[in-house]
Image (tube, rainbow, N blue to C red):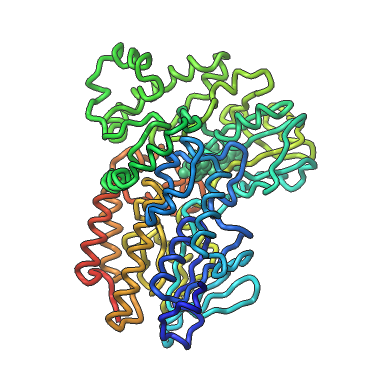
Length: 547
Ligand code: N01
């Protein structure tokens, strides 16, 4: 059944009740939810398939860091039971297949317009609607726009001199060829050692003739402990879905099972600074890679953080045979300031004969040449360069659309000058009827993304229903409510490791030159956040102006 067949809307003067941007987890669910409620909705998607993050990031080794059983939609028990995961930590192809399965199962495809980029959006105060423009020259009018544009979806191409002159093949982790790439017999470089680089390096190394890793900042990474699901295991997990979902919603990060990575389920209570140094070191033998992270004080006390990084350094020294390479792989910034990475065989890869590491802090990258990469001290001849250099996170995807709200105000200019500001991560004052799924200052990237997305989509759908039932056509946050939320969100991270000056992560926008430094996720935990969102809705959308 398509949108038109089931429509309940009376908004015939507008093309749509809602336009949804993006066909990842967020866009797919938003479309389903809106159609269920009888709205005329269309998804506009840049790619030629569904998946969002999991459509574009198909680099070798791409895998989610949340267990498959938890990284899936919870809104329909039939989907949970029908889909079969094969590994504990889901690989990219399987997540992409899963999202295609959901799309087909819910018959969503007819309402998704593929290979179309939203280029501009203009708010029309008289019509109380958005005009949405695409790169195909279309102009659609819609009462609401739901930006399901993703948190890490605007690729950041590094500004390295000579990149375009390279005579070999340049690949990008965040836009990897759909048909894959065979690195066999090739001299390959990987530039970047964040999650994408760390995941791809072992897989590329296993194929390439030689791999040179160009590292600017070393990675805090720990084993994913991935494995195929054992016979009968999936059935058992599926039987426990209702309890699992409940526990997920009650947990701080929307994640219950930490079988893959080595994090503890409950926040640790023991302090590293109150533990004797010899005992800390002994913990390496019993806890392994969990030893540095299992402390209550590492995220709030820099001295404690240094003590924890010592444990981490020791683990790297034990894992990497060449002492110079091991030293270069030890991070020199606080632990926990960037995203904790999980890997498969990352450090062991540096023990391979065909892998070498270039520490760009000691030997800076000067330029890409037609034949390879030149650093201050050396020329590297290469056939392939794989850039895994990250994203303009949280605000980047929307900033790449020319969004003009009330009185022509530009969202890009607002965020560029003021930093990421929103109310609840759901709306921005001055941009009525525009909802952001897992927008800045919501738990988003700090919680299970799928759960966060479901929560937001359901909250947004309820809000739209409320507006319809009460005859409202316009909703936006008040500037006061937004200011208070920004202040609250900022106050939660002030003085923590996450916002320390030595901590230059994408969470604060430090990877994008000139980006205003703001910690862009809400750190109060998923349950508190949900509670606050519910209270606000129950109070008639407190802090929002409806008219
Ligand atoms: O990007 P990143 P990512 N010259 O920004 C380096 C999620 N994710 O795509 O740190 C040389 O983390 C840069 O160096 P530095 C996850 O949330 C999840 O890897 O700026 N190097 C850094 O090493 C993750 O955090 C999964 O000094 C340059 C790297 O490139 C987020 O996406 C998998 C450079 C970029 O690391 C982003 O991860 C993948 C230059 N000019 C991603 N410019 C999972 O689910 C940048 N770098 C597991």
